[in-house]
Image 1: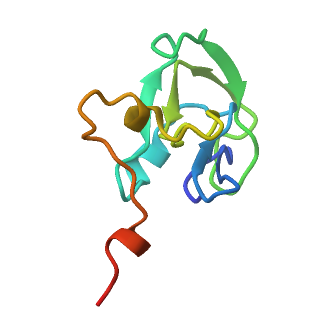
Image 2: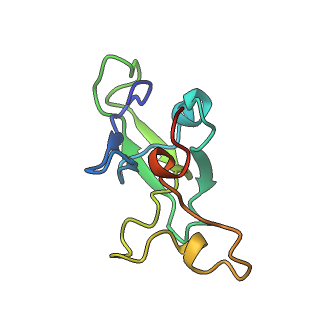
Length: 111
């Protein structure tokens, strides 16, 4: 995905956005996401320790090779890809059946 200075955002096998562990928390992806679906969360909120990361060389990283304190990381909904066959937990656990997933190709066909 363009804009990530360390190349930590990629597409998964099903086309979903995947954020790799080496995210340095710069926030460029959240700022550039046209859908507003990428958010920055503090590592303490995610129950992860603060860490230091070395910025990898790339065309977008003028600070390549320098170390950076990482205290936040980009997160995005992956539709609970790690829950085999259950689908998104928000849909599964919604007490009012208000959250649903539909395939717009079939539920809302074009005329």
